[in-house]
Image (cartoon, rainbow, N blue to C red; front, side, top):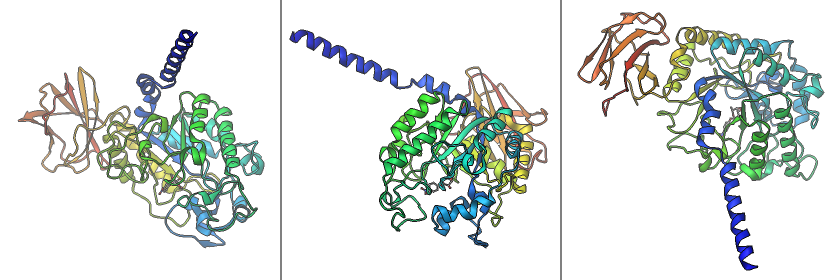
Length: 474
Ligand code: JFZ
C-alpha cells in the first residue's frame, strides 16, 4: 500500500515536471516567433484618441508648447465627464483616414504599425460590449477594425498599444499607486468606494475582445506600470499575458505590465545597467525617447520616439526633428541591434500633420535606395566608428558590412578598422557603383567619391568572402 502511494507520488512529480517543461517555450520556438520582428527593424507608432481633437488646447487656451498632449486630461486635472464633454465633439474621424496611415507607413518602409486601442484617458477605439466609452457607442464605428483592415491591405503587421492605466473607469483605484498618474489624484473617489478588481475584470474583458475580433494580432504593447503598482497586483498580469498568448499564440508583447529588475524595466529600462528580460515578463524592452548608447546585447529592444515632443497631436508643438535626424536614428538603432518605433499623432479627423507626412516620405526615399542595410541586419561589430555606423549580415561563408557614412571623410578614404580578411569587394548601395578597397595593415581602406551620394547617410557595402575575421581591438 505504501509502495503504491510512493510510486504514484513520483509519477505525479514526473508529470508535473514534464508539463512544466512543455509550458515553457523552447529557445528555438521563441526565435521563430520573434524572427519577423527582429528582421523588421522599423515600425510606425500611432497615438490617436479623444485628446487628438483637443490638440493641446483646453478651454480655448494652449496647455503647453511641449510634452505629451495625450496626457491633457491629467494636465488640466478634470474628471472624465468634463473631459468627454469638451473632447468628444472634436473627435471626428473622416472616412478612410486609416488608408492614409497605412499607405504612409508602407511608403516610409515600416514593416509594422502599433496604434493606441485605448490610451490613459480610457476611450476605446473598438466597438466594446463592456463599455459605453468607446467608438462603437459614441460614433457607431469600429475604428480598430477600420485601422486593422487598412494595415492588412498594405501587408503591414498589426500591433495594439493598450493602456492599463485608465482615467475613465469608475472602479480604477488610483489611490493604490503614488507613482502612476491620474487627473483626480488626491481627491476622493466621486462615487465613493472603488473596487479595483472590477476594473481588472473590465481590462481583461476588453483585451479579450481585441484579441478575438480582429484576426491575427502581431504585437501587444502594454502601457504602463510603476514600481509601486505593477504585475499581478495591479493588472493580474500573469493571467492577462496567459490569455493573450492563448488567444494569439504568435503574439509579441512588451514588458510594461511589470516594473521590476527581473522584467528588465526598473527605471526607464536602459540607463546604466545591462537589462535581462525573463520571457515570462515580456518579449522586448522599450527605451522611450532615447537610444541605448551601446544597445542591449542579448535582449530584444525597441526605441519608441516622437517626431516633435508629443505623442498625441498638439497644434502648439513645432519642435520637429529633421528628416536627417530621424533617418540617422533609424540607422543608429539598427547598428545597435534594436528596432525603431517612430510615432505620428494624427489630428481629431484622422489626418496626419504635414510635417510628419514629409518626414515619413523622406525616410521612405532613403529606404527605397538603402533598406537592404536595415532590414534583417544585426548589430555593428564596432562599438565606435569615427565616421558613422555599421550594420551587418553574417553567415559562415560570407559577411556583408553596411557602412553608413555620417561624417564624410574629406580625403576620400573610408577606413574600416580591424578587418583581417583579404577577399573583399566594395560598392555604393544606392547605385551599385564599384569602389576600390585595399588592405592596409589591419584596416581596409575604401576609396569613396569626393562628395556624399546622400546627405542623410551614404551607404558603402563591404562584401567579405569567407568567415568574418576582425582584429581583437578593431
Ligand atoms: C507612456 C505614456 O504615458 C505616454 O503617453 C506614451 O504613450 C508613451 C509611449 O508611453 O509614457 C511613459 C511611460 C512611463 C513613464 C513616462 C512616460 N515613466 O515611468 O516615467
